[in-house]
Length: 437
Image 1 (cartoon, rainbow, N blue to C red):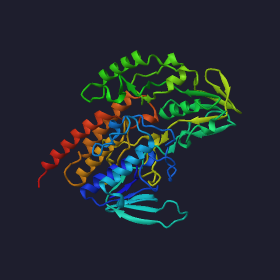
Image 2: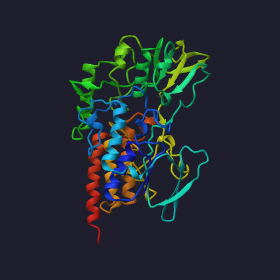
Image 3: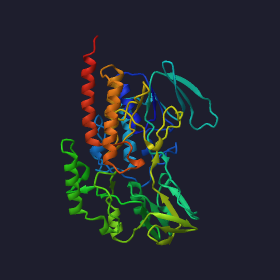
Image 4: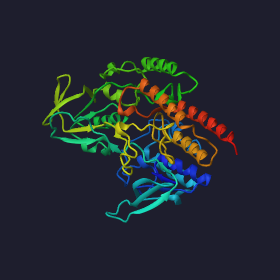
């Protein structure tokens, strides 16, 4: 098997394959594991910035088979997470199977598997090698190819324009007027950091968002009301009541009221943004209407001059090693059976290609264990019609619940996904045992 990527999902897959004795090569563009969590990663694909801390609590992010150190804080710094991933690899002993500084340039079918072309990642015109594999597992992540506003805003901005993917710290913002576009976690972090050094910091967006603190009642908020056995509607009502009684209305801080219910879009988790808004250190404006030199005109008629604009507009899901006609995710949408198996291409699977309300790592670990059960013949996939019916039902429920956006094309609930996957694994194991012979 070929595993593409040694980030948090790729190493979870490699661990499961290694312990099961499944032969594999893991290809990693960088010189170390950790992917998106490696600050200044040599592969230049990481979106990690100097002041990044996780926004999912430690116990909800750690791999169940290898807990984080007990002396880690509730919300560790990115350096601690990167160190944890390194120790994970060495604990399970599969570092030798990772081909570092190797880029996969092409994956295509052949008669009994796949041909994977790869080359040295940092050698211009380096030699290309093609290797045959029975199966391919894609774990290349989906937070590395920046998505810019589409369509672009009218006019031209004469100042500095950057995407959140290129942000490292706020030092370059000192004495400048900074506009941050977006309402996600990165936008909040960047706006907060800019507000301490910039002459002015303004946050703007198309719509409002629910801002959720990291703590409530002295506990990480993601450890409260997170049970698959409590109906979603009940969880939503209780969550809205808790936010209303503790945080209050978003309009109280000068932010727009969300146009959707809690849980109908990926929430924004920040313990600092509302404080800075309340101090007047960050101001809010609605969406951009057009540019004129260094002047930004907003849709409410206001205009203001800026030196820097930071687009926090998310990422595109792309696979540069696949021909577009073979596998692609137009509009960030790639339907998969339980977010792992491609229904039309036998031997092709994905790990971590989902957006949970929570961390990916425990889900990637469960996906990897499931994949190994299939490879070892201990699990039977449903038939093609049943698989597609399951996918349709999952997608209909997702699109009905979430705000229409490229951000919500592979959304799952952390606890519900793990519970439903465990049930599917049991079903498939029973089906496999009942097969003749």
